[in-house]
Length: 109
Image (cartoon, rainbow, N blue to C red; front, side, top):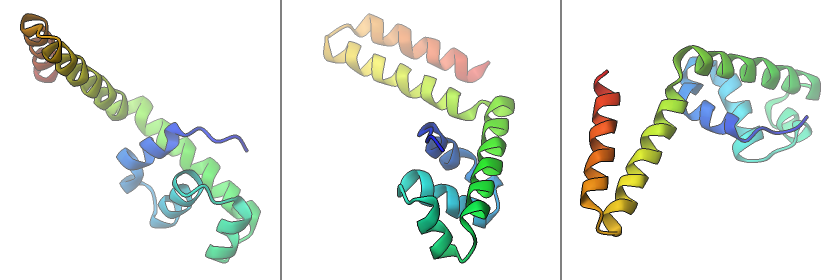
């Protein structure tokens, strides 16, 4: 099973909506890079059960992101703040102000 490391970020945002068991398995697989066999041994279930939990949990996390878009909005926010900081570091205060005003408008509307 190929790992999509963006799932770790989705788990950070939406993990609270998963069961504790799903959240733990996702964290072990994506954050701690444990194999299916290692997770199965640690949790006392079969390797296939671990895989099934991961597949279902990933589907749920992607569904939440598709419907709510919190992770994408957070990335956009972080990118805008970084862009404003870089503008400030270059001494481009008007550019930074423009970026921050655009960000404020996005947050309000």
